[in-house]
Length: 527
Image 1 (cartoon, rainbow, N blue to C red):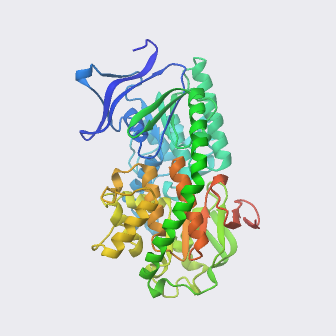
Image 2: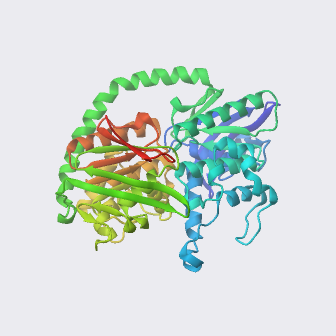
Image 3: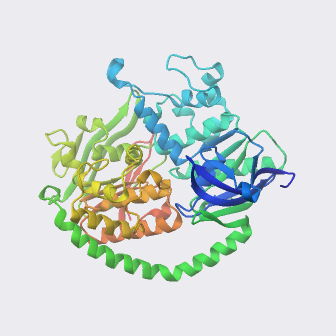
């Protein structure tokens, strides 16, 4: 082991609950290095960073004289999509709205959650430390731009706002090592720039011997998003290390592999289209009469206003979704994109005090939530959290649950349902894995499965809220191609939220752009 090594993993395996999940690893991080951990979904990088964060264990192979050393001890904090999902799950489990005056329990605020990162768990009645009352002036709060949401309940924050709050908590915790897993997912352009600049500042400070800031290890899904200040790359594939070295050397390797794949992309899309046609032909007969839609206008919103207390999210919104018109919805974190979608899915109760019409009927006129969801396919952060709570479902049954609009499967799948589910799994690259459990997949693989679940019934409306969260380059390309082809079939109209311009589909000629704080607070664009 080198004398300046901060972390040394020599001839070790990674175990989770005494089960070996990655075998035979050797890697070292030295002072002055800035490491990127990369690789395909399910390839082993998630297990590696979880072991670095103490969520799994590095176990030396005794017969090979293995060893594990870290200069950081347990002074490690991890910020990830999984941690954000777990946080929302915790808030739901602790919701006491049925027992509080007014029937609304906002749960932990951002301020209280950040304070707990320093002082540990606090009871609801515990006073905050004095320094927490002045968090607005803390450099980390300013850096991540969360000054205005410190006193908002975590459950009312957008995905991007939760991610930034998690990062603030990590920064104020005083931990010596931060493991940031896909930190830019779900962040708007301004937030991404802030984090890129922040990462560069910390790396430069560390390289200059400034111990004020923590060391950072970055885990990313996509090579083209990495900060310039990265010095070294560790790639996992097939549960083993396939590259370990300088960033410049990996860049050459990546460029060569990308050029090789370019010639295969057209053929892959043609094959995907042919298989999709066959699968859809078998799926359509399973559609019930209730899911058949003849209306030209699928969704209509008239002077819609949504908010709580004195915080206004949507103001005087007028908008229509017509059959066959695919829309892109964009705007900064906290602008109301998810709230807008939840008025359609029925997950926001303020739909009943507004004029919102779905499939020709005003919400609140006697239809059930199941009548609505039968005609929707949904991919969202909320759905991902709910499915993580019933993670023991196998992949085939999870896809079949898309036919039945349930979280989990209650009742056996029919033979036809199981056959079609297996075909959709094959379309998504999961052939032969139908009996694997959802909870055993990486976050990105879970996301891909939920996308397949959303399209399995060829719904009249497909709602995609940041669908590519956590997807590696290969899965991302496959899923975007699949969505493009589904749009071409004409049976499904798409409503798509994303911050990433490269994820915009060519069929999306209509854009709803949200501008919080402006009058009007939205713009409708045609492309």
